[in-house]
Length: 409
Image (cartoon, rainbow, N blue to C red; front, side, top):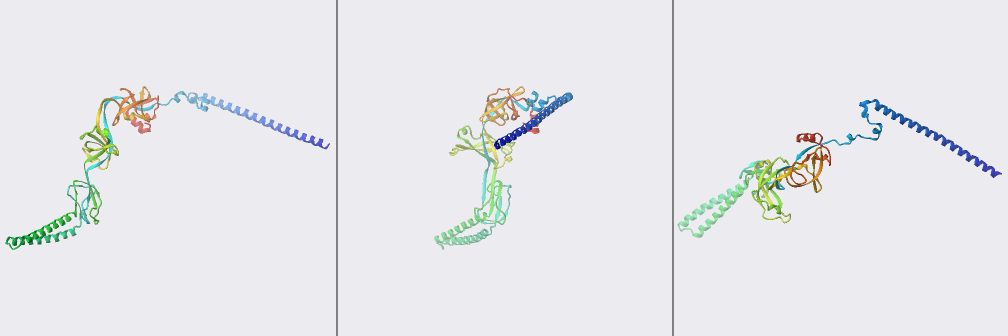
């Protein structure tokens, strides 16, 4: 009996627990259904409000013309999906002469350049020139203290004077047969030795005056007044930059097309607007075995004062001309790896086409294949283009203004 009663008690407890769980589930289910009903009603009300607002807005709100679904899901009109035309400048393929150049770079060098070294030791007592001064050959640049050399010259001059008197006396005695030939020869030898010593001291004294070796410009001054210098000390650098020289190095196979006096064009790398003419003055007779190149020396003509020794320049040697060939502006080219393309204008759009180019001269390039004379290509603005892009043509002036305004070209 005891076990039977305990079993009945457990059964009653389990039934009560199941009833409690069922009641809780029913309550939550009703609440969830009520929430869904409320949400649906709110969505319906919002949709009705958007539709009513779009209708009441009339023509002005109708860009609110788009349905609320378009606003929510980002639907666009076809007109908005179409890209606006790209402003570009267009050039025409024309016939013109294109010169052939051999191009290289060089650093301008003066025709003459020398370091002025001290030939005597002593203290600097005067400096007569500054860097940038123009001097003539033999002009005094500086002066050393020459007191020791001057004293030595006085001493040897006095000795020479005494020996001169002795020699004259010996000659008179010899003429009277009162002096032997040996005595006369000895007097002549001593006098000659003293005279040579005097000339040596005079030369040493002249070394205390530093002079320009040739006409040119002082480019460096390495001394100051009061400074002591030694024999061989570097005092000044003088250069003669008229004319200036440009030494370029070209492959051996290209040099066969060059000859002395062939015209060249020399352009400043720092300021491309400075361009001077010149000519080939020397072609080296040997090939550099390390590089396989030949040194070609070119001379700058005209107003070489626009350029200075040490300026970095680009040298172009004209070797021939391709006459009346199809050409386009170099800026129209669109290089991609080893290939070259252009955007050919067709009505209001463009087509990207590959081309083959030939000679390259200044701002134009020869077209060998891919374009015909009369074709039009985009010369400015192709950075924003792709195949099939719509374009709007600008004049060169308008294209420059557009580039300045937004940097898009």
